[in-house]
Image 1: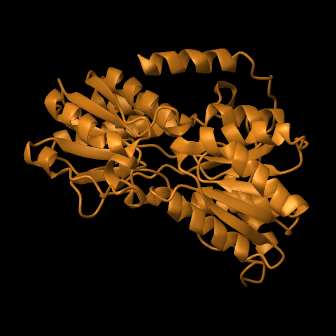
Image 2: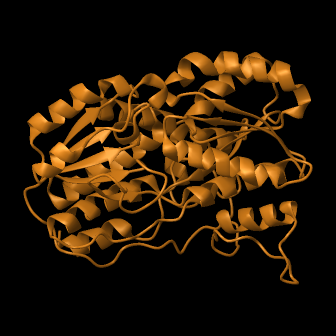
Length: 390
């Protein structure tokens, strides 16, 4: 029921979306390797950042999965969601439900609400549901929070009952999660996402960026991205990482206003950019910037994940946020269903890793931008239906 309400909200907001007509940037496809100058030597930080961004904003020709087993019928899936207030989690979860309807499966939603203390109760409810498979949407179920006395959750009881487990963004890296029964984790390359976001900040500031980075220490994905962003910024001689701030995503609503005011007072004009591991931080930072009478082109905001609807609105309006490194969230929801289907058919997982897109005001209109998300025009829905024979 909660998903339906949030979908309605998103539909209302979409009606306010300005008409966007922008030409897609033409450049080479994204690459995780270091950029090179024309003579083959490593490029200077600003030049490298320009190459990274030029690759990351390109539209079109996105890959997809084209082979796999037909649909395994009659499956029930428990979708255990980290926090539906997180726009990225919501979008991927909607994609999973869309795909499950296409393949003919039943899905039941279990929402942790961003609170690690809810795990035991929620997972007991999941066990009572007796699903064929579990999709862990986000890292909270798996990783826990050592700072709050919660370690990684033991998923082996589900494995012993023959329940198949996969995840979305529950770990920094795509593929199986070592030491757990999670057979594969659907995500993009976090280092590439981090390089996109940090490189955009370096370019925006003309090679003189003063950056704060928001992360969430209880999530491995968040910390991997944050440290990678910091590394890119520190490689720029005239750039500076002013501070890295640990703000739990579930705390953004209560903390970001005060944190933002403190940062503005502490750093003044030295603060050119705020980077974050998720767009949700900026949902609550922007009102604080407006209250502080910061101009829309003052402190600029760039997110290393995941490409929420609110981020698209800010980017389209050129209001504070200049970019988000967006995953193809709906496509990843479909991929999560496909990975479960492969495992039900006793076949290997796909090994597919969908690339992210750096969404800016220049390329926002292409591939889903008018619907406030990055949704590749590569026919992935029809491709999966052909695979499943649906």
